[in-house]
Amino acid sequence: MIIDSSVVLNWLIRGGEFEEECLKLREAFERGSVNIKVPETVVYDVCRRIAESDLPIDVASRLAHLAYEYLRFVSVELEGAMLSDIVRLCRELGVDIAVASCAILSKKLDEIYVTADRDVYDTLTNSGFKVTHVGDMF
Amino acid sequence: MAKEDKKDVIISLRIPERLKEEMNKVDVNWSEFLRKAIEEKITKEKMKRIWDEIESLKTKGV
Image (cartoon, rainbow over the protein chains, first blue to last red):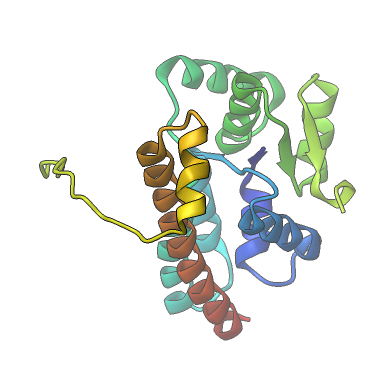
């Protein structure tokens, strides 16, 4: 499955609406019950969101480093042709580049896209993408 | 860019004789299988270590 920044941020920062479900998903991944991938754009999107969070600066700085170290084991490099489709999807649906990357990667690999963001879920489902909301998984 | 180290080394492991006999009965490239299994285990352990540090950091951050 492909997960987006909304799921990863629930792993990293406490208090998210679907924190419990996202952590259950990470545990399933650690047990080997599910396979998780993220497009490389998600790694930088997570760092951006950590930078914009209200975490203390030293914590945010270290967390960004650790998030990168963790996600690099599951990140997928995007090809030029995919970036072309990603930009097109950003324009057509008004989603950000990280979300569009997840959608395009999930389509290319024929894997389910999992998000913790209801708006993303609604937008992509209405456009025919194979998306699941993490809240509906557990 | 650093030159990738492609030198192979040989490792050996002790297993029960019965298991070795069973291994011989199936058509599996055991070297390749074990190489992959070791790589996967190393990745898992590295991720586990990073996650432990993330957990500890989360306690400080919130």
